[in-house]
Image (cartoon, rainbow, N blue to C red; front, top):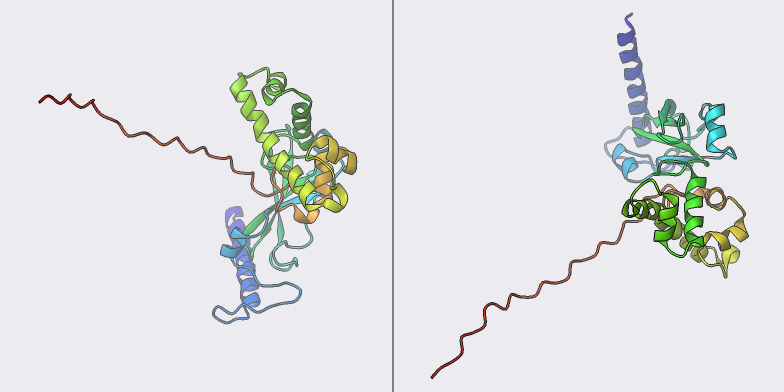
Length: 258
């Protein structure tokens, strides 16, 4: 059999397995969605794309350089589907994808045939939704905390580009991390009571590197924490409304003569 035809048949088998699993979850009826105590409500493609976090944590103590050198993405494993809680839904490994930074970095992926959704296993050394690693983000935030202003820190951190671009580069890292620190201090008064939402104060309680510790200790809440620490969306920048325009007064009226 030709190789391309064999590949087509493999794809057909996987598609059939996913549809069969979806039919099993629905109980065979039209629109029926039975509750399973081990699985929960079955997922459909529409609800899955809207709901679950498609980026998952791979716990590792390696730095990004060590991770690349050891090709540790080969060791990344996902034993249970994040949507269905089992592996019989058609969950399978789907190779890897490449990260631009650091050079040579790859991230393992899995695919659920029933949910028609891919999941990536992001190692702790990498920042989410940003190039580079998490320790680099922490160094940027620490530099801002130690500097007299964001502008001064940006000028020192990125002398290779103009200052406005350097400030934007810093704020893309600073803003989300500050949001995560504030959320932790607010939501965990038992552990972080009395802390200010800074790397210095939070790190004194959690240990270093701070952002890695936050990701490890917030494993079940990463979908709610903002990237690059968590796997939620980055905070939206505030949009400034343009000031209201005054009415054009028009020309001065002609003086009345009578």
